[in-house]
Image (cartoon, rainbow, N blue to C red):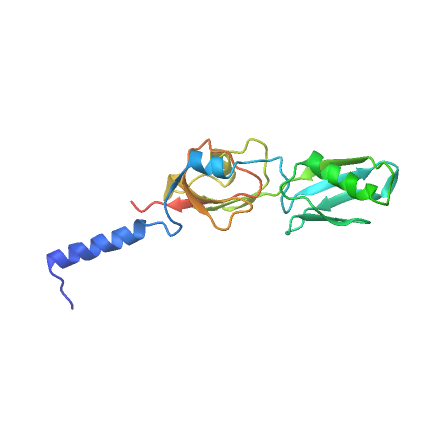
Length: 192
């Protein structure tokens, strides 16, 4: 059996504990910095949102449409229109403009948000999964939807990925941190 001398063993344990505590995503961002850089918005459209569209005087175009993964909505007659990043009135205006270019003289379009994309809560919660977004959803409410924190949860530090982000960011978050539709929240594990 290999016996390590006391100073070597302590230095090895120190190196192991430092690597275990490091976050692979990089430095921890404050909640205020995250919210200012990636503001939560439940009013902007994104992939997975469903819209109910009505064209006055023509039921052929009326129906439910979903924002595709590329951020567009495919409509009869006009094709794919960009929707991601727009609010509902701006998208309705772009539909009216597209239909006015040769199809209708003065189209009247009504667009309503039928449903928004869900949030995902992963990691150290009792029931991880996908949950429907509700207005004024906070981190505490999302954790409650997921059955609460496990005893290993590192409360106060999360990894989050918002729609449009390349990768998740580690955030020093409060329980009142607002979430947006499509957010993926990973509750991290504490080591001590």
